[in-house]
Image 1: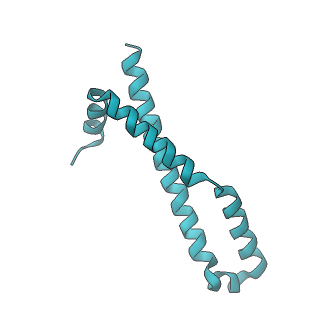
Image 2: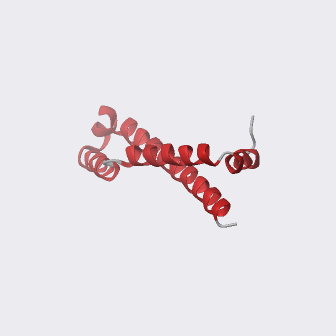
Length: 93
């Protein structure tokens, strides 16, 4: 299994693959954040309006899933930034 520094070294050696990973992470970030604010605010409105009944009807599960989507989006964004940094550093040397 690659360590983080091993992964960054691999990205430095394979610039085209690094660019491909960067594109894929950008697309993943875009798809994961699409309507995220609207969904979180709708879930918060459900939970604040219906309280315990909203939790029992799946509001808590939906909130946990939205938090998971947010964390996955942040991981995709961080991967994008790592690839961007590697490519910029390799092109500006």
